[in-house]
Image (cartoon, helix red, strand yellow):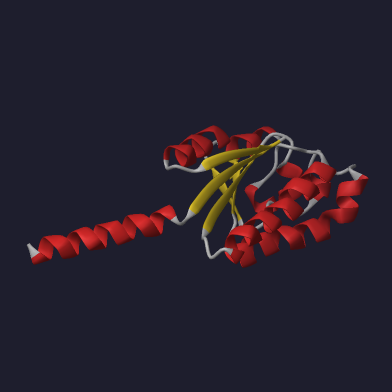
Length: 154
């Protein structure tokens, strides 16, 4: 009986610990640089801080597809985005802010391989902290099946 009670306490404490973690998957499709900066670069860090200040862990994954590929490319001159002057001008700052989200807040970035291929973007030409996945569809479905809340930035 004593072992059973200890087991129940253990199981309850694990389930409580899991309840304290917030999980979110962001469906990132926007190609609009202002929306991207506002909602992802600024907004995400601000919202993660909200939870951190309340001692609540948050697990964030960003799934990149649609028009959002361009924000995660190392060398724009080798892509269809080579003439986007605003993006070229801000590219280093965007990179630093994305890397900061990854390094400081442990945000995971995943990019749709099918979309990369259709846009002729080499996986060697995306930032190292971005992981190629089979498709954005599969990734989004898998995260939602594991209890991640879906947020869309389009």
